[in-house]
Image 1 (cartoon, each protein chain N blue to C red):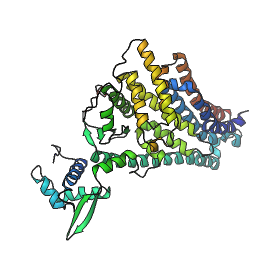
Image 2 (spheres, helix red, strand yellow):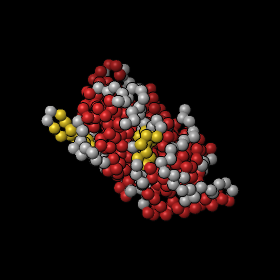
Image 3 (cartoon, each protein chain N blue to C red):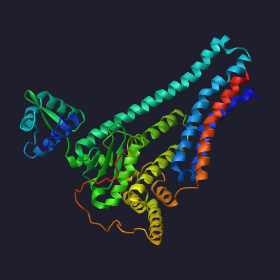
Image 4 (cartoon, rainbow over the protein chains, first blue to last red):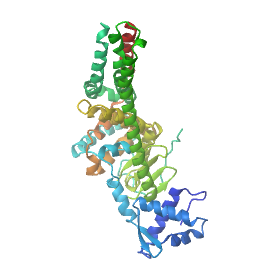
Length: 161
Length: 286
């Protein structure tokens, strides 16, 4: 389980614990106790029992894990697969925001478009491309010109500040 | 003649809240100079606030009719209560909106931090084939894109999208949207214009698009717009008006004549000055 090298923040721990739980779902469908999660991290760095408990409690409050009592301890398991959570986030139904709130909270690159609008877009782009071609500047790199590269890293040339 | 000033200020508040935004949203020339246009929109809003706060103080000389206002403590208290109440309700609304947004963003950020792949300090990649991109503004800002963006778009378009989102974060466009949202919600629903909010949203997108053009070029930015428009989910289109095609049109239109931009700034300055001058006239007329 990769943990950040220096002083892990709670958020990083939450992520690491969540990933551990997702990975161990096949072997432990009932979930893991705080002690089991702690043992898994034991070799890599010193984490307190209470820290793991806090992290799991926070994940439970965020509805990312479910817990069930098992004797004196709780057993924690993921509320859903990572894929399902990602899909839900993409649909933006996970948060209980109404449309106006969501549009103010998150600034989207594009807010969606109607079919007529996409037709408008296509003809506007064609005009731009024609103009670029006539002035001789690059028409290369059309959307289909390059194949997909799986999991390639994000390159961002301009430095901030 | 100065007796009409409080009335004029009230009329100004009404005009700046409804009819003028309606008219301005129709003047598409503003969009060609998004920065100046945003300043003009802010001027409308600030002028409306000043006019609303100034209306009661402007009426003081009417009531005292030349008398020293300090000899009418009751009147001063009343004026203070009216203007102070307005200011307080505005600030309260600002506090509420800001708090709600911070909570929503923090919740979403924590979720994305857990489920998405971390790519650098603040870029997060959601493992989903549908191309989408957005940013979460604030102190712990995030740029979120989906794997679909990386898989389906060539590098230069990815750069355009990232430059667009980074510009939102760098220029704190969220604070502008927040400011307009607060004032918008304070205006009575019968008076306020949805066009105003839509126009402001369009203008900040146009500004971010320009940053994308500077980094990645015009065509990649335009193509990225088209690709993401084509893949948007139906729910995402809900409640959104014209956007993508207008922005593409603006990319093609280029900058207006500097004189046009200068007029926009002068217009903005005049708007803010109007209620200030009116109040000064009323108070010195006594």
